[in-house]
Image (cartoon, rainbow, N blue to C red; front, side):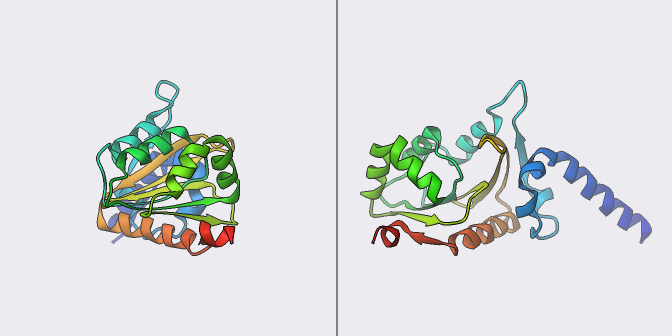
Length: 189
């Protein structure tokens, strides 16, 4: 019994060490993660010799073919994210995105054409929250991603996976953020 508890402890310490960069910027959202979920996730961290590793992993997960459903939360405005979303948005794709008010304003100012094009799509719903978002997430065709950002809005790391427990946890994070948001149309009226 002691051996089993010690082995579990060692596993937890190794998982925390492996995810140290992610946890440094996103520990708060991981507090409610079910036991064992984080250990099932892939971790991708920016490094001096590969500062774009998390972004590249995100782009690999999203792919460049139309998806059935795309749900996301983003605390930043990014041309790269806009273009990757455009690539996977097919005629039957249902897409939901939650942003905070600052991101909404920056999107409208920095990328007015993309913003207007997104608003013209029937299958796209933009939701706005009054809470400041400090992490990102993505649910796309059975895959869940949670991304961590530093205090300057730089993507530092992300965790992802397609195990049912992982996707369920990311869905619960999404629903939690979504519950604090309203559709953009209600904000404008």
